[in-house]
Length: 100
Image 1 (cartoon, rainbow, N blue to C red):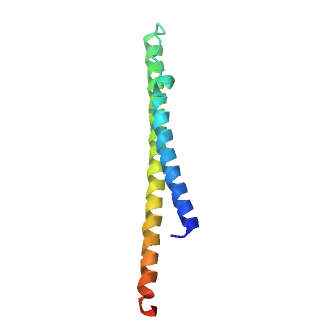
Image 2: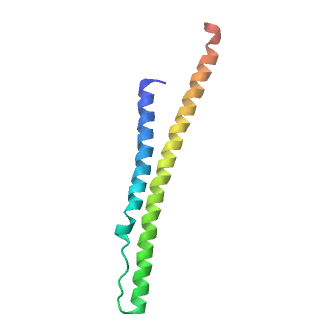
Image 3: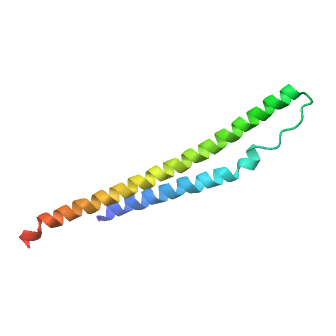
């Protein structure tokens, strides 16, 4: 593999790891963004506040899942590049066998 191609591969590896690390860190923030719901004294209000809190929590986890998905896609792209590069080198070597 050419040196500049290896740099791109390492960048893609780093990017995939960063997406996964940040998704994990974002999930760990969940208790901070979903504190216990206080009693407002009104059943309707309490129910509405509780639903909004659940929505915020679901959006928070959904965003963390998206970060993980992006990390998976970057890793898949990196692996695809690696397979493609191996295929191109193999083809070149096959073509050059007779030129010794």
